[in-house]
Length: 197
Image (cartoon, rainbow, N blue to C red; front, side, top):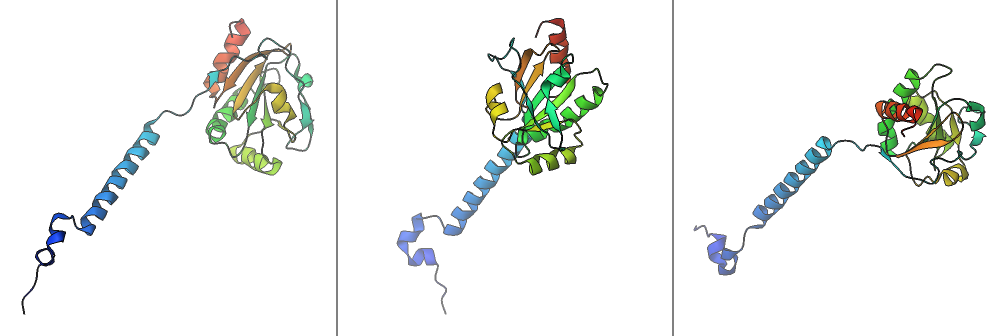
């Protein structure tokens, strides 16, 4: 019995790469690209908040009244005389998830009754999901339900997270887009207090 080399038996196959080799090359290329993507995403710095020039800066903050996730009601006017940090967020938003531990740290550092107050506004999210998200992160500040999106519309919010700093007289002094850190909030508050924000 004689063994026949299939490449010798089919002269047309002699110049073609074997299918097994091609599949291995493709798999290797996909693995290399996948590994490069993982490295890129793992080493890329997280998103950061940027100051946004908005017509609201220097103007009276729009009214912010509504039910809270905890079942109470909130009125921004009740915080007149204090610095207020308004944070628009959603449980489904990865940058919101990124910033939440920093917001918890900020709220803890500013827990004194006369310190800056942190207030959340639920953006395009269900109250149940937003409440579960805040509870899972240890967030204790009030969060206003913006069911019809009217609060977001009044503040010109396009997508979360967006954060506003409101002065004790009710004037918007800073608008930040993107996930904030506790140190960034402290920086912007210090600048706002000095009148350089």
